[in-house]
Length: 452
Image 1 (cartoon, rainbow, N blue to C red):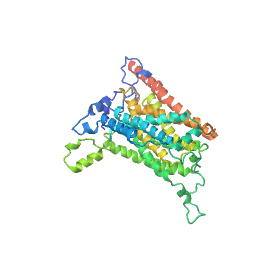
Image 2 (cartoon, rainbow, N blue to C red):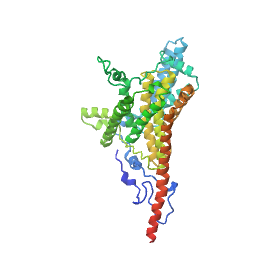
Image 3 (cartoon, rainbow, N blue to C red):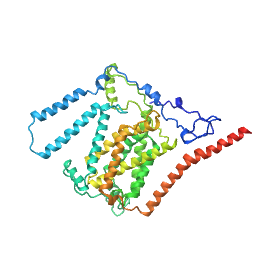
Image 4 (cartoon, rainbow, N blue to C red):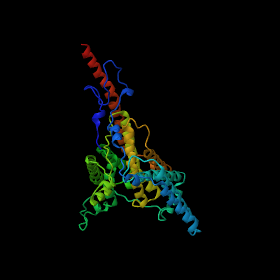
């Protein structure tokens, strides 16, 4: 997607800060309310370019087909009520009834809720993701009102193998890479730490980079989470890893490699030309096949220029986004630890896949909310996802308060205190001292020179 930043760039003087408007000599001095931050993206131009077109294929494929979906849903209910032999198993009937209710809610959402910011491969997919988000939040709220034992037993209705304590694997132990005492298999320590999660780290960060679309934010989140693992290993044994597992295998190779490949993918999608044509305007069979495959690629691509230091609002928003990214990552470990869900279980994979889809939409909505002055409403998916993350945190706090309140080691307290003080001092310097005190001094010097 082309970024016409020159069309709405704010004229600046050479002696003014980057976020200050051009101010005439006789105007009042700059205040917090008089500063306007230029947008990173030309939203008005994009709105003009995104006019819908229809060559005959869109009118059918992109239609919601509300009546068709209603007939199919009612036909299934008719079959259950009239033709199906009823079962006397109350547990079986309860499960089927709940699934039918959830399915009807999802069908309603797919056909009746408004379209979101993504349209590929079909808007109905992203409407389904939004409704699944609401359904997941409802389930989380129900779990929040249970006890921890009841919540664990509830999961047995999904998988009977759940509901039993699971030993956590300790990734620490011996940190030697080469074992001289075992000549037959000297790399057994290293092999023991190479598991499913190595590939999941790499591909996970690749996809997360496509969501965040920013080197700075991805690297801060990656390194910050490794520090969080150091800080919380006294609470969860799973966080106890060797130094080379933290910084070489995770941060450098898996996370760093995934971020690099992800940003290269973003650059490719940014430079790629997007000239879509309807199916029936393509003359060759090969062209039609490529057009069908292209339906599963982005319709266009928006580069996220977060500009965290452009204004205090953006800086605080970036800090909040970073904290929420940390909470999503930590929730993966704490929820499976508290609810006794093994790491490779399909529930963990479904949650991960859901956060990738919903997170992509939410991050796009948040970026537009911060950058587009015409956007005055927080996005639907962002709203629901925020509620989900906070509810997961509340479940962890309620179900295992003793674990999450274990005192931090003194050296960890010192590290996080230094980080917090550094952030506060830098914020004061960047958004108060530098922008108003130093700018005012430069302005006074300019006036004095002009008077002379």
